[in-house]
Image 1 (tube, helix red, strand yellow):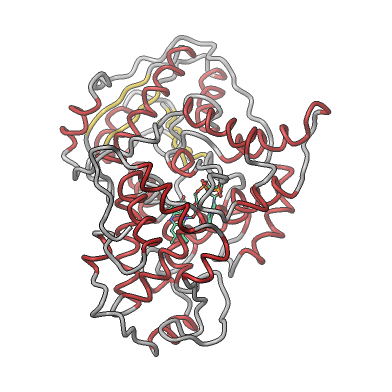
Image 2 (cartoon, helix red, strand yellow):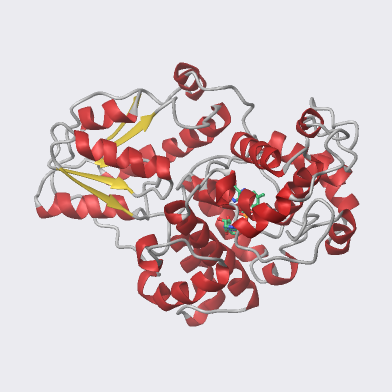
Length: 445
Ligand SMILES: Cc1cc2nc3c(=O)[nH]c(=O)nc-3n(C[C@H](O)[C@H](O)[C@H](O)COP(=O)(O)OP(=O)(O)OC[C@H]3O[C@@H](n4cnc5c(N)ncnc54)[C@H](O)[C@@H]3O)c2cc1C
């Protein structure tokens, strides 16, 4: 049995490929289990809508491959062992975060068969990059480049030779996603209607990026007024697309008709984010003490932030921030984009975080608000990239800079600096025009 949890895709899935290989060696059947657990940390109906849209694609792909999919609702801890009762081997996806690792250990301890976890959502196995938390991109980059060629390889997609597996239990229907989500009892949040989950939508977005924006990525990816970045993070988060497939598709396309794998400024800048930055976040999820709490902020940054209180604490409240009603119209637009569409431009996320640090009564309060909003509203939230992104605002993976009010030696960002990078008025207009017709823009946009 393959328990699909982090790599939710029916093609180009290393755990599924291994499960198929093992089934074929034994001439036995294979089935795939997916559990919808309403208790998943910080999950809400927006996240589950995207996830279930993705499962429709998984179901179609597995049908084509002759492999039964069983979707169950309930607790991972009871559903996975119960479904694995008749299995010879359990294959599952790796997970870098403490919650995911603890869950795999607990499930592994409750099944009678051998259990194997496969890394399908990092290009490189985190344990090969280090057995400790890297200090920053500059320390992990050489290790990534040393191993990249060996691991950046296309995946073989074997067919199932033996009979289709016979899952021991029936699953739920996927016909009515809304009803299924209501049954899970998760907090309600309007779906992010501009993005749809699933491998098909993810691959079409990847093609669009390669054809239109990859070449100009190095020069323009900081421009929030243009849509130059890939926009792939939500699909990467749900495992609807794997980073190896993305990197190989980009490299093949850059090589053109000549074949092989190529490089170029746009491609190199993109791979720096997709592989180096992303694997740095995964490394921190695996090894950084205090992951997910203010304790993950480096001690030099904690010290300097403790010394600098904010005069803004009483002027911009947390409620004003959540209502997109601060004195900063660009920030309000970014927060609106996040709340309505579940996303925010790459470059603006750091500014968004820095302003919350500026306005909050203390840096620990700012950390808590940012992580809560990040994980509630973003489709790509609840991910190592988000936890590390938030801690980056407070100096993680960064160095000390000249002292500034509130920020101390932590790097600051200003509205003026932002306006030098892109046309902020055009960005605000873009967000305003993207709102659904029945949604009034915030007053201070
Ligand atoms: C405060 C803050 C919060 C963030 N929250 C999240 C989050 O919840 N989920 C999330 O996936 N990313 C988060 N990021 C990282 C980054 O901003 C997003 O990954 C990026 O904006 C996604 O847009 P894109 O797919 O168009 O990125 P692109 O620019 O097209 O980059 C391609 C891919 O590279 C990866 N990537 C890009 N930037 C980073 C980065 N700084 N660190 C790690 N990986 C990166 C992502 O997987 C991304 O999809 C956060 C950053 C900050 C500063």
